[in-house]
Image (tube, rainbow, N blue to C red; front, side):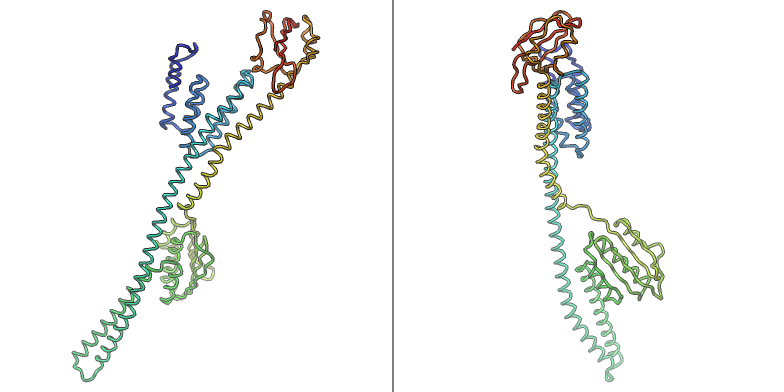
Length: 457
């Protein structure tokens, strides 16, 4: 809007070009709509300010959107640095006084860096909110898992009670049927029926035991429970725990697959299960009936994609080992929440500290330059009074200071009389007062000689 209105006003520079304004407005629209990369849009909009100052109104908007949209901060930092360095070099080449172009650096901080940091802080805040909701969902899932686990354990406990009571009754039933089977005074057909009854009771006891075993498997899904069940089934297995695995589910699958292979291919061999924070291994010793895997079964192939490194092969003593290096799980919602909280706190500090620090640093540089230029542009009143028109320029320059008065101070001086035609004039201050400006001396040279000298307050 300022760009368009600036072109419609009757007072405007003769170099105003409507096609540049239209193209610039199109670039702004594309940058705001997100049709181009945020960093590219920001660079283009900053570049447009070189053609027309009204484009500066778009810089804070595009800078803020860049902070919201750009995931990485480093490219934007390099962009601002390039603009600062490039603008400095350009102004130095053009010979523009530092007091005129240096304030543009302050505007770059206020209109560019500060809105970008605000947008970046907003992005981190939204990520924090999103991570918070993910954390809530994770907690709900964990509560459901805990509730399901407790339900399974309660079901297993009830099943165990049923097993103990029903198993006892079925055992008594089998004993009585066995007694009837061997009774001499019963007909053969009754003894046969008693034998069938005893066999049926035994089968029912076995099936009840299998069902209870399945319920126990569901209730105890840990590596320790898996090893206990393997030991109860007759396997010579020992568990060595060196830490809590970073991925318990994958560790369980590795141990399960390793015990299955040991039972199938090395029956009767001793097995050692080692569980550490990041390494899980199942090692079995040699067996008389061993027929070890040479390339790994399909179960091992399925595990390869779930761990960082999986090795399965024969050991030096003729046994077999399955060793897996667990992949550390990606950061969960809780880690994300903590990370975004830290980023938000840092972002809040950076949002205000960085612009303030930049402005302070630039102000120190500006004040330092102003003090240096002031103290090195003083022409002593006695030396000024001793100068005479017609003196050779070389003789005059011997008493002149190293620097001329900066242009911003020259503009504050009352009007000097017009210099001689073709003369080149230089300006100096009469004292080194940093807080004010007294008299200003003007020396105009023509044909390598001092043509005129003037003093104005």
